[in-house]
Image (cartoon, rainbow, N blue to C red; front, side, top):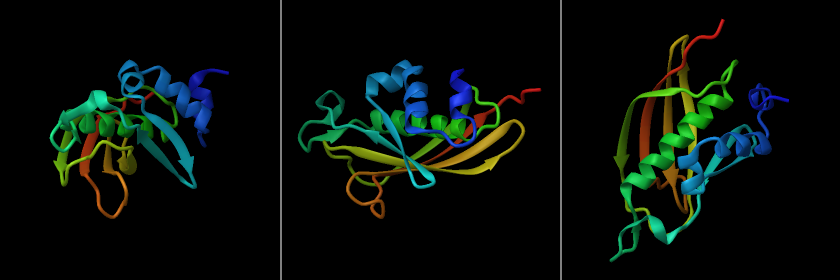
Length: 146
């Protein structure tokens, strides 16, 4: 079975793991993805390599942004009729509070999936989803397949 066939329609946690293994930066960050009811929950495991502010300690903002962008791309792939790697057009990120040295989670909401452009909102948190560490919006180019 081809990788794209394993993601088509209802992805499994195993299929999501296969997609993550195809993205070297996602592997470097150690991103994990699992299905939770109808959503995909992304996890950035606690790792001292990603400390940006050692006095708190807090994760580097670039790591948080990269984690959220990778989560958005995989979420989009999982929702495509013909899965392909989407190309990022823009990414807007708002940091709301420091991300301490602990596991960080993200959920995505696909707001619009057009023929060529898709919009996704991403929320990242650590202990409580109602107290996000960061929120972001991303637009992706998703080439139409015939």
